[in-house]
Length: 541
Image 1 (cartoon, one colour):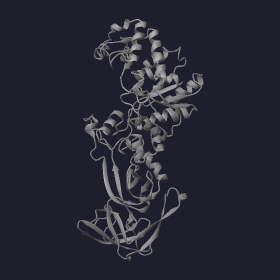
Image 2 (tube, one colour; image 1 turned 135 degrees about the vertical axis):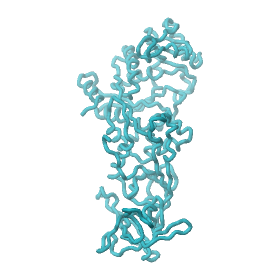
Image 3 (spheres, rainbow, N blue to C red; image 1 turned 180 degrees about the horizontal axis):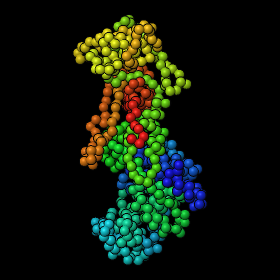
Image 4 (tube, rainbow, N blue to C red; image 1 turned 90 degrees about the vertical axis):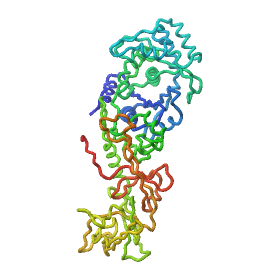
């Protein structure tokens, strides 16, 4: 069933209003993209332009020189391409001359004027929701005077904030943003692409519809906070019909919101600047580069966005829904391996020193075509601390004195006891002959535990991540009051040889533990936990 955006496009194509769908992804290069921007990529590229055989630009809204630079541009290009976007890259700053010409045209038509009212006074004169605004004394300036002043603004004859160009609309409009908003401001700052060529810059609500029109965008799809801006968008395009006879159509969709997740570039930048996280790609961050380092895949992110749905009303998704998407994918694709997070020594006492045998294990039980691989077992092993209890609690089905358990893919063993010296515990067991890959009569294992062969394992660091925010308690609104002090736990354990040789960025299912990826930004053997094995998410929960 088509969603409301698809219905709009279907109607426009059927009526002949458009013959080819053209959209754009319009990020401002003032930070790194987060998962909320993946929704824009999905809608503007996959759901519309690609689905309808059209075109989707990646256009940088670089009209604010004080906050933008190449670092953010390069990161955005990398992230959008990671999500699979292909197309033409453009920049709002490349259209500055054309945008300026449009402003000149509006001045000549008596639809814009230069105002020297101080900013604080201008805000006061704008009025309130119940009180109309007050017209500026500058509103009556002639077109000739406004053209001269606007030209002098461009020439750099005035200081920041001394003059602005305003649209001449209606100071009594019930829509506050239609009360003659500023269209150009003076900013004496070096632009990362244009250098010092410009010292006046168009504001977003003026530049964006013009850029859409220049590029032939048919459907300007943006998030719901821009719904109140649509009348201003249409005012710009309606009054430039002689320049752009075919106006783009702005339509809005609900933002992607996720519980316990910060979806604000401004606040994410604050976390980075204050050192509260390890950079923009910290795996706890909801940035696309953070998700990539955490081990999420483009397909899992896009699947999550698609399942979250396209609606007109804001809502909030459970983070477990995103986790379910990557878990389902990795369950089918990730090779299996064994790692011990909190290691305890395990000795097979009825085997001699130097004893070694090969065991066979499936690479991925869900993909028989992947086949099997060999792993070695020896006299000295590492097992998980939580898998042993000298005095077991009720229903404990792991290693305990006198009980039988199976070592994953290897022998059934019987625990014969343990000893602790200098605070370190060693567990002892005996292998049951004939149980390598099989059973013998009269011996029944209580459970299965994983292990690592001490002779050829590697030391490894395992990083467990939790949400950056604590659950909302109905009181603490500020993110700073909800930071989770346990969002990162680090363990140093043992991993089988395969994991020490894997390439950075390789994902695995650690048997009985969870899904992990080898960290791309660390030296040594470091694995990030992507998500646990257990799926607690239920649709519609």
